[in-house]
Image (cartoon, rainbow, N blue to C red; front, side, top):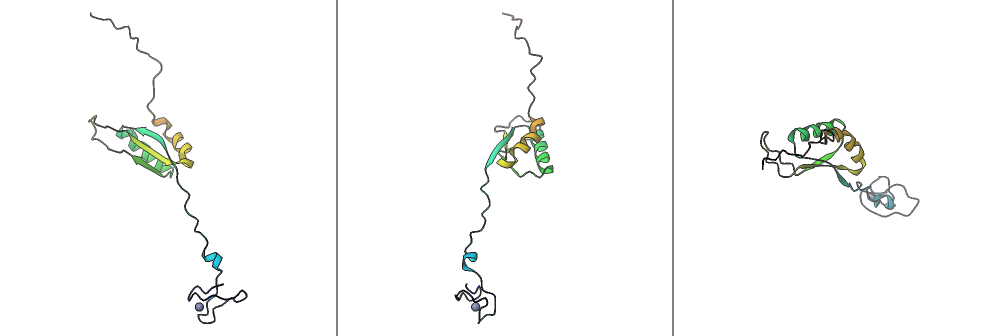
Length: 124
Ligand SMILES: [Zn+2]
């Protein structure tokens, strides 16, 4: 047991520092490791180069309280097709499933139907 104020060590059984009149504390408790924040593992859940969808994705995640980071965000002015890297949304692995579900609708839809027949009436 030690005094938290003056640091004097007391034998077990003492509960108060006779000098400082404060309760003694257990050293082992003082030395307890702070529960360090869990290492956050970020996973990419969404990639998008479209400023509109990026903004939507942000508001969706924010509305659900999902912490996220956006990488490569270089929003080009609307009307310019100069986005080189698509923005990458990363969230804590624990939130990944939720985030993916939220952003599912934002994924560009691949239209499977209506395959353009590449017959091409060649002019050659
Ligand atoms: Zn003391």
